Length: 264
Length: 276
Image (cartoon, rainbow over all chains, first blue to last red):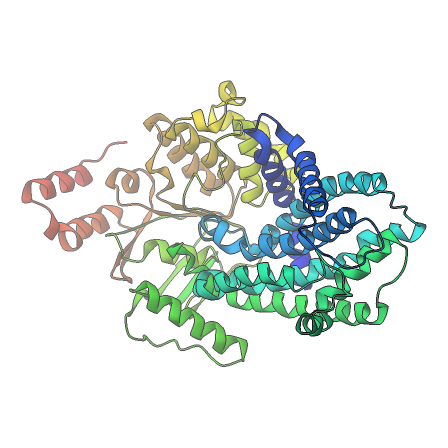
C-alpha cells in the first residue's frame, strides 16, 4: 500500500488535473450544467414517494418515513456501487493512456475515488435537506457518518480492483459480477428493512456484510445509534485486509494485463 | 553502468498472435503469479518474439534513430525502455535517477472540449510534471509551441499540426535525460519539424542527455541521427554510427525487395546527396 501513496504523491498534479477535467467535462455540454447534481436526487425522492403512495412496495417497519429510509439507503448503496464501478473500469477506460505514456494506474485510481467522493457529497447534501423535510432529526453522532462510510469505499474498491483485471483478460467474469451487483442490491436491506420475514432472504441478509456496513451508517445518521457494532467492526477490518490484498493483486497483475490492453 | 545512460542486455518480449489465446495466456499467467509460480519465458503455441535478445547501450549526446519495417519490434522495444511493458527476459539498466520521457502518440490525453491552455496543463500532468514545475515552464511551452494566439481555443478546433506542437512542446519542457520519440514527429508543419530537429541537436549537447527516436523517414534520420539501429523481425541486426551506411543497408537489404528499382535508386540518391 505504501507504493500506492508514494505514487499518488508524485503524480498528485495529474490526479488534480484529471479530476478537474472529469467534473467540468461531465457538465460542459449540458445546458443545465451542474444543476444535474441536484436534479437527480430530487427525482429519486419523487419516484419513491409515488411508489410508496401507490402501495407498490411493502418495506416492513421503518423507524423513519419510508421514502426517507429508501433515499438514504440507496445513497449509501450508491456510494458502494460507484466505488466498485469507477475502480473496475480504470484499466479499460484509460487503456490508451496506460500503454502510450508512463502514467501508472495508481493516480488514475486515486482520481476516480476523488471524483466519486465529489459526486457523492453534493447529491447527499440535497438528501439531508429532504430527510429534514421528512421530519428526521440528527444527533451529534451523525457527524461520524462520513467516516462510517470508509469500509464501504474500501470494499467497493477491492472488488473493483479485482474486476478491473478480469475486464481485460476475462470479460465474462466482469459482466457476471456487474449483473451480480444488481442482484446484490436486492439481497441487501436497502428498499426493505433488515427485519424482513422471508426465511431464505433472512439468511442471506444475515450473512451479507453490506447489511451491517450500510445499516450502521444509516442508523448512525438517522437515530444516532450503532446498528450491530461488533459485526460492523469485524467487516470493517475485513474490508481493510481485502483492499490491501486486491491492490497487491492489481499491482502484480498489471504488467501482464497492460500488454493485452491493446485489444481494447 | 560506467558512462552510459542506459544499458539493454538480451531483452526479449513475446506476444500472442490470436486474441482469445492471448487472453487465455493472460488468465493463466495472472493465476500462476497470484499463487507464486513462475511464468514461462519460452514461446507457447501462437506466440512470437516481438523483440528478441536485443542488446545495446546509450551514451550521453547520442541521437539514435531506430529504423525497421512495420512489425519489426521498434515500438515494443521503446515501450520496454519507457517502463510500460516488462521484458519477458533480459534486463534494462538505467543510470541512477535517469529521467525518461516517452512520446508514443501526441494526442493521448488531449480533450477536445477544453482549451489549448487547459490541455497544456493536462498534458504536463500526464508527462509527470508538478504544478510548480509547470508554472516555471509554461512560458517556454507557449513560446516553443507558437500557440499563444490559440490558447483560448478548444483543442477540437486545432489542426493536427497544432496538436503536435502543443504536445511536443510540453514533452520537451519536461527536460528528460532520455527522450523517446516514437513517430511523434510524423505530423506537423515542416518549419516546426525543422525547429524540433535543431532543438534536439542542441538539447543533447547541453547536458548528459540522449534521444531515441523511431522513424522510417530517411530525411529524419539524416537530419538528426548520429547513430542508427536497424531492426528486423524483433532482432537488432545493425548498430552503426555511419548513418549513411546504415540507411543504405536498410534500403538495399531490408525493404529493397518491396520496392521497384526506380524507387530504390531514388531513395539511395536521397541518402547519398542529403542536404538539410
